[in-house]
Image (tube, rainbow, N blue to C red; front, side, top):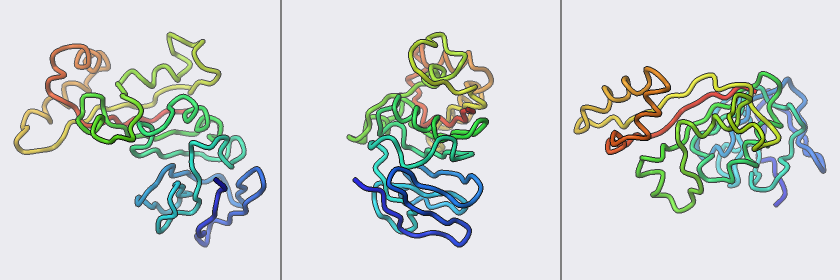
Length: 201
């Protein structure tokens, strides 16, 4: 599949090269797998030519059409559960500039939404992304590493019927050890919704 430019905003000028998607402006932000979530100030990329998409590209086709260290931020909203996690994070790490940030949202493994979508490939815990940092206890797993996890939060659904969810969310996120306790104990009977995190290169 060839990459296709759908449109460009006035402040972003794109030119498609045989091997790279070059930008004639300072390093922008990438909205990876944007779908209908089109954001101003981002390069909105998706495999489908939806309205507002700037670049059509299937992220399963690697390497992506960007030079190394292109973006200061990559946004992944409910994307990483759909892809091969290791090679996708490797590509994100490659296209981020030093000090750049990956902002992500993924369903937590206790959520029904983690299982409901037949295109989901990964079940993700609060500890999954630790493996991709320089502080990993398995540093020999991968040939790349993010500098650190700047923030991580476990979210619970907001429904009036489940009045305990806000209390549980507050308790769980008070300390990383509580998130680990939640995930390894019968507390999982109270399912979470999703994880948000920021990884710094």
